[in-house]
Length: 285
Length: 311
Image (tube, rainbow over all chains, first blue to last red; front, side):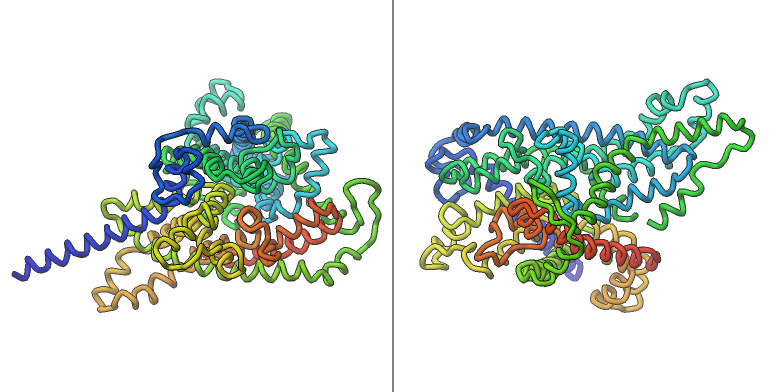
């Protein structure tokens, strides 16, 4: 009897815990699911309150098509966003890979000073230096260009990325290079042929953070990209939502939000391990 | 930070018997590897930082000549009531949102810390809103909170909670708390993961021993968990405070600073002065105030995190 009642209590606790877990999970996922489901309503239905969230008068992708007719169009802004995010990822990876290797494996004058200089930029909020960045970009002839925005984004990613890559290189035992070095390989060949496969997890973490941060960045893009043809998705969607292109079409806004969210959600689900790694590495520093 | 600099000294042991020319070449090679990073940080961080200081001492319109005016911008700041109101609002928001985030994230961290089936799924679910950008989240909630086409007002009316549709974004308090709810939804998962790593670093034997000694759950939490998590708590706290002081996206997208300019944050005011009114010099001076606040916070953070107590 006593055993049975203890089992009963155990099952009760289990149900309670998982009930709480499931309820909270639904609470956190609901806004995302609600939005994604609503975008497939026909435009007329999309103007009504989303109760229930799923389409009731037929499935439609009209909201996505409508969105492409605002300003320079959804597809155009999406292309801008893809260009900016992908270029930022590639440049961030290349530059932090080189710098991480340099800091980890070489001795040169003022090494520690340079390292501290790069890391300390994390203390300064970039929001406070946007005005001069705006002026410098125009002096360089890069005002209102996506390339200019990429350079700014890469700079903002560098402290975290270089810190990650230096740690990744520091964790590789020296003996591995010694053998290759005796064979007469140059330091650059060593980096690309021997070291790169060993620091690959660090590269994925750096790339993932660079993508999420640049894909979602709002303020710098808002300030630096004044020409509608250069808008990235967040800026474009804010313009649509503020009614800059006439009456606010909430169906279209939610379609835009879905396009902005999906790549982040998929990348996170695929590469979760690397994300948490980066988070905790940043946290323990 | 201190651990980094301490480590830096022992990274590369000096190779003793090398010819001088070879060492020099080594010097250059190392510098070449870090050169691209140094160039970018110099052009887009160090120089802009210096320029912010320089510009803050000028009357600097977007077009035309700029003129040195000494500390006049800073004197103007002391009289700028709207800036101080923005700063006051920012601090109010920071305090409330930080408390709210911790009130949600700490129980969540305790919940997902225990290894049991499905914990990974719960963790992922709670964390999903974090990877969605602040702009996306704001646009999403702008719709949910919309009085006619949104979810909350019509749902409340249909459930009979309100007679008419109630516009949540029309007056200060409902608008402010809507933002708090949205931000907690968006970032609680992040704070949860940080707190969870802190919880996991506490040795289980310690908890077990206390349990055997007859300490109840609350006593164990007060006497073991909290003291051993001081470093993690400090980190999560500073990250939350620094992020909140720099809040902009959600107030710009959801409220446009309204109702009646009551939700303009510090960054929002700087943005208005610099890029709407184009008073670049004055904006730079305001930026300096913000910068000093954030650097002070960072220095406090370095101090709090330096001594590895609780390990």
